[in-house]
Image (tube, rainbow, N blue to C red; front, side, top):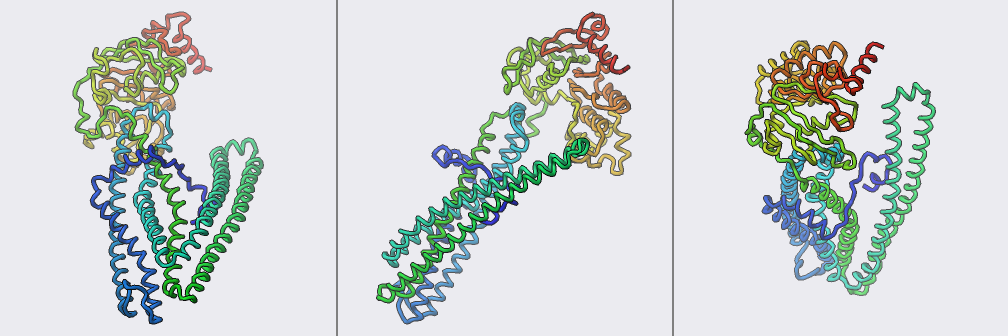
Length: 610
């Protein structure tokens, strides 16, 4: 274990941060331990068996001492008297009991820990997927995934191993010291006078070596970053003929890794030599002093053997505590990070599908009434300022404007991903809070610019719009979305795996699957967020045809950069820096000299013809 920790090649194993163990942190970890309550009977039995197993373990040095004394014709004690056969059979009987008890202790601890951790993992995931978008905008996916994997695994280790081992070592240490004193108070005092200093030195020196090890791991991680950056940007490296520069940078970093690792090896060698010398020196010193007591008739050979074994028990228990305590600190830190998620305020969304059925139907009328909004993470920047407009059911409303003007933010507000700081959003004349959140989201669909598909089949991705839809319904939606033909050309058809994020499909194919998904959902309000901006001409034509089918009979909010795609809109809203500067049809806005819409339209026309 020490070799693994001090080797610079273990940079991939990221060490979890520790937390101080105090009243507050123990209170926090107590909240997670409450997950053990449904299995407390088995947990208490496992603790009882742990106690019995540890106590029985303390009996074996006494059996060994008794056997040695019996072999010399001496009576070891009134509790272990009799011949070699009696003592040996008794020892084997006790060993069988310990083996029996140890088996159930291990199995029950693992059963309790696995079930409790599954409950914590389930509740953490359920809470995560019901948290508001603002929570995710302030955190990285990798960090959240770490909380469900690494943090919960650390808590699992604490329940299954660390907690049980700490109790076991504590029993061995206290029981061992007590039995040492019973065997020989003189030897015990001489041993206890020396042992704490050795352990304290080992702990301090061990921390110093781990610090050097972490430095080597950090440097190696830096070199891995260089490799990753170079390979990701290999085209730039070659275009600027910087192979030599990157090679020098990588080689210099590796030299630093080697220097730090060699420095750590020197200290590790000193540490190992010192520990070996002190360990065996202590054993020789104890046996030396004990032998003199044996020669003076103050103790038997069996007692001396028993004392040495108990001394090893105590030393091993003391030596294991620093690492066990460090692991418990990691578990406390992990529990605090998991509880941060569990204590977050979730959206009013149920994880039971039956609770999320539509209760109030929305016809499609949409209104923004003097809406003001800024993102909670950036309160100093007003994204939308006094936004007001109306869209009647079935109308096509386009929102245009320069990048950063707030177009996509309006789409997020319609979906109730965020809520305005002032003003109201109305559906069919009622404020949004008059509906349940699931009622709104069940009746609003979005086709984004960058379509994210899940890693399953095409059928499953389309079916995501309505999980209860039949295969025939999916095929019908795909036909309306101009997707059926290219899907049928795949050997597996609708059972084709799309790959992670849909990488096996082109941009136009992903867009048409997203449109089929939206058609299957059959929304009252449709949001098209730059749905054709990144497509080639042929794909754009196919997607645009599919969108015309999708928009038919629905309120459509079209966010577009290409103004040519929204000329037929019933109403065009022009946004600039979060303010509506113009509203009207294409013809009305083009007739407005000096207007932003006319300027953007002419700019795009010049770009297209140049």
